[in-house]
Length: 377
Image (cartoon, rainbow, N blue to C red; front, side):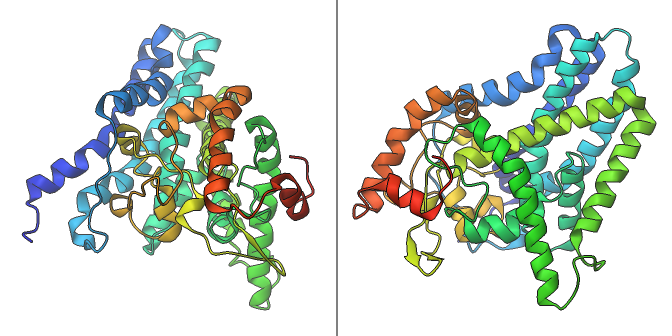
């Protein structure tokens, strides 16, 4: 097969570069104010949902054996975003607090939108980068997480989530019938505790105390502290407040995605504390084309759990025969998750159908789940 030309490579990767359109929208909101401060969530949530409705699904797969040299234009967007976000975020921290044409409410709403993109794009790109072998990419992932004060997500995701997804040992696997708000309150301390415990255990396996300098939590705390100090120096106390506010919204966005990715899906317990291997059936997937552009194929989540270090353009699509499918892309599904009765109406019947399809031998799921995890369901 003839390798694609440079023009073809650029054309194939270009849709994923649409995230850069969020930068001028943020600048317009800061410089103009008024109704434009809501452009960021409008574009991120609604525009891509509308695009999904019009352009449909992408069921095609790139060759998973494609070499790194063929992925340059895909990789570049994840490498470019980190410095772009640093400049954009801290310019706005410097500019917005003293902008007289913006009311206090407009500033808060504007930084709500900033949190939407530092969460939807920034944390998602950090997720891509943290899985790579290149140290520079992992460092950029750390910088993106520090900008939202959620650096421990790296340890939690790599050492806990990927090992224990679909089991009670994973704090970020949403349980059946668990509403998002209850999940959010549970996962904030749960993910931090599990991440710290995992790193402490790793140090213990090397006969070290958790206080050993190689514990990445020291790097996490230093980076987060530096971000907070920089926000205070550039924007004063108002800038610091806006920085923390956008960080909270970004984490909110992340945990909404975590919530929908594995909601109600469980791995079968084999006894003696052991579970079956992670399979494609243990992640919800969405093949919607536009939202996969925004989220760099995060919605091909089953394949990510199969090959965690596989770069996003090579993630494979799974059909309904192999993995459960969401009815809509992540942007619309995360909005539904914020209305628990609506979420349960849409998703609970799909979970029940999934159970019947993959685990017909388990007929009493309430008792089964309670035996594995006695917390309320």
